[in-house]
Length: 65
Image 1: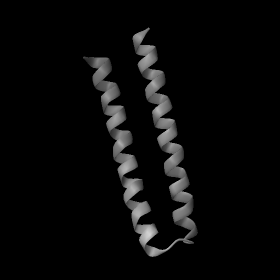
Image 2: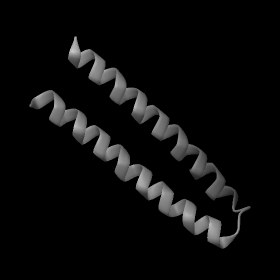
Image 3: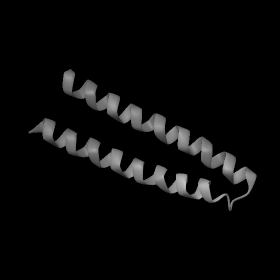
């Protein structure tokens, strides 16, 4: 039962992160923001992707060990 809980938590976290990244992507494609905001959003987008990889890696480690 613990694995089900961990799986649901991980999937939920990844879905929230994916939704946030999609919003960033839409705003970046509109180009209706200043260059400074554009640059910051690109950095946030990359950090979000790295965070999603970490969440998934933590999930795998939790299941395996």
